[in-house]
Image 1 (cartoon, helix red, strand yellow):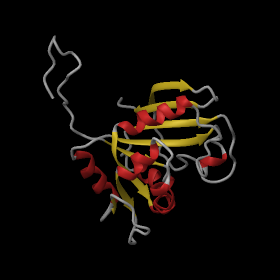
Image 2 (image 1 turned 180 degrees about the vertical axis):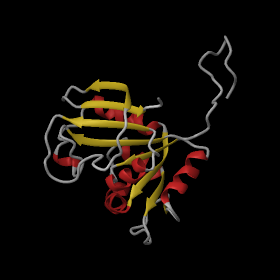
Image 3 (image 1 turned 45 degrees about the vertical axis):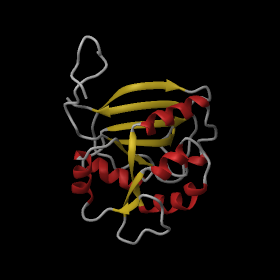
Image 4 (image 1 turned 60 degrees about the vertical axis):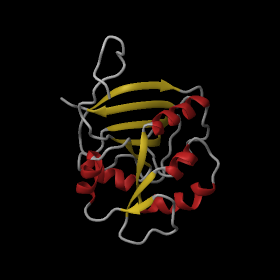
Length: 196
């Protein structure tokens, strides 16, 4: 990139080449995160625009084994946009000790320990690295202090069943960087880690 100048004030030198790890999660008002189809009953235009904004900066995704198996069976044949084109083209890194079945374009199993792999991946050139769903994986990433930003969709509903979002997250404070309410009453919240 070019250095800043008066003629082109939007172009700045990138001082930190580190890629960000961004978690995008769908949750109920009481923190339910398993089976989001049970509480995300509408997906209005504001929510679609928000999802498009989130994935626009990502070129890689981390998936847990269960999420991989469910998504590899669904997304290759799906026409649900914009996520279908994104997830089918993105590089997918999967936490598993077994061969990836079914096979899916651009998917590879993570070899070795998770934290060193992620730290090395964040140092490589590329866009943001996304985590979508994969609650167990997200818990591991949080415990190892590897998540840089959260992008959450909070449904105006309670969901008492299944796993909760961040039920094993360490204590800490986040900074709200964006807050939007969709016409259907969903809260679209972006947080970054507390740097203080």
